[in-house]
Length: 141
Length: 138
Image (cartoon, rainbow over all chains, first blue to last red; front, side, top):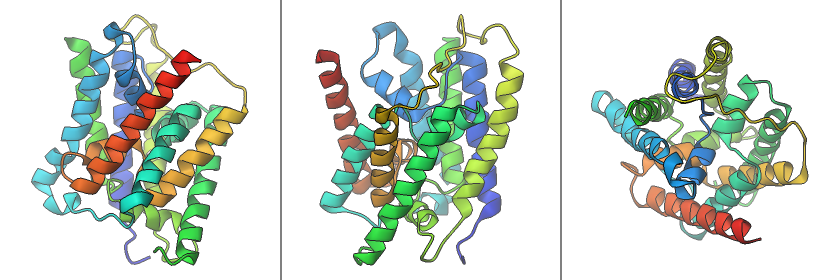
């Protein structure tokens, strides 16, 4: 557990929470990234601009943090190549089929005490842990 | 222009939060899911911090009649547990575990994380578009 960073984790989490609360207060929307993205790609034209400006902010937020702490932008990808593409397809299909991801179900849904979100969160946590366990057994980590 | 500007600020906060918490680092996410290996429980604190703020904030905000710049709150109403919910969450979890990326961090990292982030995010977007196209036709 030498990489344990509870303070920055909780601080970043609180920022994500503030983002979700502000989106609800200003736009009346759930801050679910897969839902916002899905709608941005295929929604009535009148319902698109707020989605794209949210996504623009999402892309610029890290750069703003990186100005103060460049090390936060140094990332590495344990998985590359064909497996990375398979993963992206699963994330794409899974979030649309299950109507949400870590943000929509994990944060917003659970904060609303939604039973669907609780079941979804437990499910993706379990399959995520199992997947990493199998990857480790297979020598992929 | 108030609505798109306010959602831009929300996006900035979200992307900033993912970065401060290091959720944009796939290796960190995989370490969180790696409970039998060199486990790093940090991301539980991301979820915890986000949940506490959202739980309290939603209760205050939803006391109001309408949001500031829209005519109504749009909240999910479904309560049924159906097969697509479970299957979708299960598939998402497998992809999340494989790559260490979920949609938020993927989109947030295209601006700085190089080719792998671009490959993942482009594939994810194309998959979502294909899925929505097929569903619209059926």
